Length: 121
Image (tube, rainbow, N blue to C red; front, top):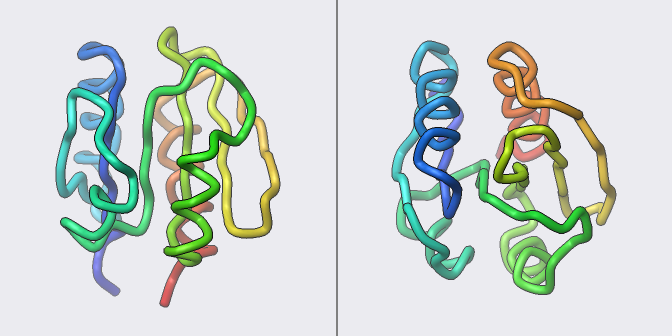
């Protein structure tokens, strides 16, 4: 099975590097692109055929841009991470919210796998 394709968008450099290190050490997932600043989510997904988008977001609610992504790319899963890494939330087409708590390497990898499993085509 090909690795889970992950795109990282708009988060502090240190957090971005930590997430990238976590993903890069797992053989079943790969970071296909890093966007240091906010870019349109649909465009970012389409650019690299990403299955999971991980992006920085301080508010816990589902943003309009994220809602639009899920509507036009229903198999994509989204993980939002707070800037300080203390809160991670996943979103999928079912418009559900699943808090994961503090970001730790093993939990982050498990969260990426879980959201990708929902999106396997």
